[in-house]
Image (cartoon, rainbow, N blue to C red; front, side):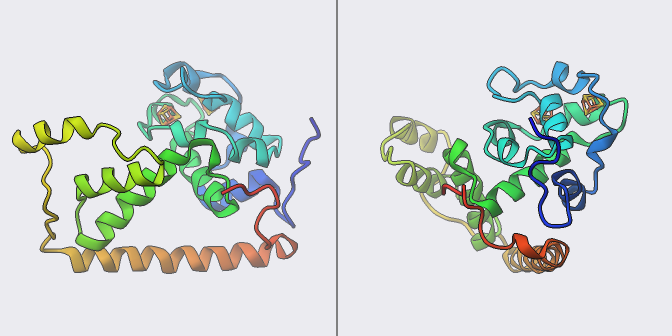
Length: 207
Ligand code: SF4
Ligand code: SF4
């Protein structure tokens, strides 16, 4: 493994993650407490401590193409346990954003779609329309009837509705999304200035 082998422009991967998350991954001294407490390690291909180490070593593609970053449930157990006050959950968030930007969502496409579906539902109506979200998810993942048999029971019990309700504050929610998009565009522009030669989509992108 070559240290810093995936330096992006003037930024190392570690610096890129720090710029996006506000967390300095170099503070991690590999005690493993995050991994010991993480409820999702059984399914992960890289445990949280290993993710932090690979970030330190500049292994951008390996981290951004991992299943781990999508399987992280953002429960923040790792963050709470870290003796170095490294907010690993926030780092995972930043890694998902970087992975999406690089087109690396193949590892857990279903989760990436669910993410996208939930956000567009909230953006459109100010709240989630679960029925529509699940139907779109099934269509995108080419499993149109997955869990369909549970729908009628859940509707009868009032857990989901076939009708899309709009929140009274949908306009405020939409403005929130627009503000976030503006901030993200500004950040992307500033990252572009920091790493001029790195602007084309990643060659290994596979979405
Ligand atoms: S708990 Fe903190 S210091 Fe320990 S391995 Fe995890 S991130 Fe690193
Ligand atoms: S936030 Fe993610 S990485 Fe951290 S403990 Fe929870 S599932 Fe594991």
